[in-house]
Length: 84
Image: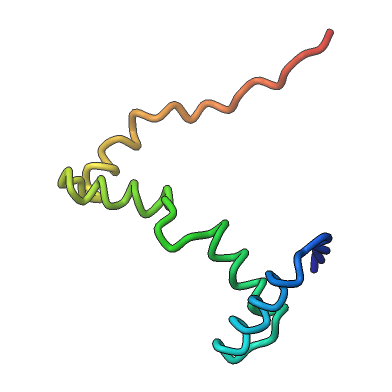
């Protein structure tokens, strides 16, 4: 598992992290993990698959609509690239 070192953190910030961790009943390290996780992976982030499924539902698309598109797909294997 990757590890991160944070240098030059002020004493006030470190103290605030320790207080916040105690308020949440976890270690300072666990609190920092939670803060970082929330910052880079917010609950409101766009999830492409979910967005596409929701859009399809709003448009009224069904599995039958998708199945109707399948025969039109080109299933010919791609030709390997030649470097000669």
